[in-house]
Length: 206
Image (cartoon, rainbow, N blue to C red; front, side, top):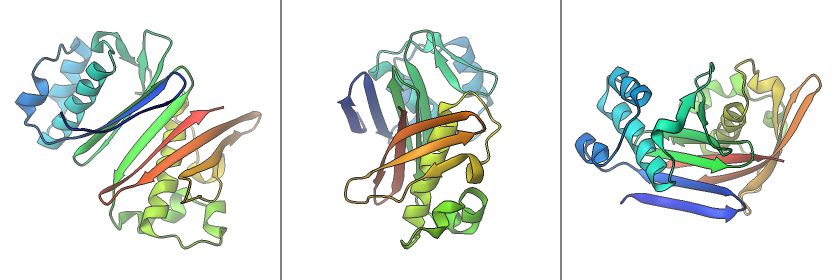
């Protein structure tokens, strides 16, 4: 079973990261897909996108989440019939899920140089910090901002203006972040990891 990370160190919160090494048939084995999930799987054209989708469902099974109970809101973000909040992510051969009784978000990205070309599109204040912005650091900023975006029931977000991430503490793999929009101000405990193949972050709203 290719679970490479299983974190349960926060009250009522759990994170699982899955490295995809199986075939599509192996991933589908034992799954009871809902009608919505079957339709979504059928619309995915590439093999890797099918595998990513199925790996998330395998994680659901590990977390004792009934796929039949997972719906999607008008913004395409997953919701559960239970009181737990869900956020999902995938990139390359990795998929991950976080569940919690608090508002949460998670994002994983395969490390590449593409992030260097778009940093000005999602960073503003963060570009002025006195630290070297390597591709890994830039990806963590993206991970955190994308995670906050996933935690909110809206798509009207300017990553540069509405989300602020404090300088990264690479020794503690933790920082604070905020969503700021008029009278709405939410703070997040933000955790991250830099692996040789990917970067990962997840946020928990205070």
